[in-house]
Length: 298
Image 1 (tube, rainbow, N blue to C red):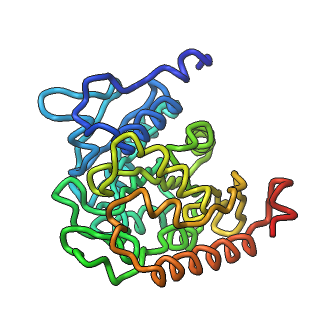
Image 2: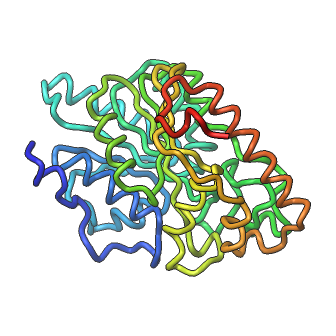
C-alpha cells in the first residue's frame, strides 16, 4: 500500500462524538494508520455511538458490532476466518473503552491473549463509563470525581499494562492523542507483528473530566509530560522501551485544568505526585532500550 493510501482518513466527518472528544481523535488516527484493508470491531461504548449508529456508519471500513464483554474474542474469530480464506493482508482491530477492557471484557481479553490470537486490541481509555453517565471504572484514578464517586474515588487505577505484559503477548504499548505520530507509528508496528497486540490510548473526555472542550489534547499532552501516562512499548512481556522523554512537569499542571480534581487538597496532590515519581522510576528500571536523553535523566 502506498503512502497516500496509508494516510487517508478511514473515518468520515459528521459522526456523533461530543466536541473535543479524545476517543474520536484516537479512532481516526488508528484507522488512518491501518488503512482501508481493515475490519473494525466495536462494542457498546462511546465508540459505538461515534462509529455506527444504525443505519449509518462514520467508518469507511467494514465494522462489526459485538457485545460489551467480547471485543477481543470477536476480533480473534474474524481474524481466524480471514486466515482460513487466505486474506492475510487485512488487519482486524478491536476498539473498546476502559469499562469494556479493565472491567467487563478483561476475562475474554485474557483468554485471547493467552492463546496469542492474531489481532490488534485498542483500549480507548477516558477513565470512566462516560457513555452511560460518568460512572467510575477500575481505570478511574484515585481521588477523581465521577457521579458514583462524588467526593473522589478511593480506589486506585488498575495497572492494566502490567496485566497485559504478564500474558507475554508479542507487543503492547501506551499511546496518547497528544502525540499522533507516536500513536500511528505504534499502530503500524503492531500491524506487522503476528499475534495479540495491545495498545492503551489515553483519550480525554471533556465532559467527564469537567473541562473546556478545547483542552482535550492539552490534557493528553500534560498527562505524558508530567510522567503520569508515559509512552512506552513492551515486547514479549519483558523488553521495555520508552518512546518519548517527558519533561517531568509538576502533576499539578495536569490536575488543575480538570474539574474532576477541583476538590483535591494540597496533601492529596502531593500524594499523587509522589506516586507518579515512584511509577516513573519503576518504569525506568524495567527499560532495556532508552533514547539517548533518558540515559542521563535525573
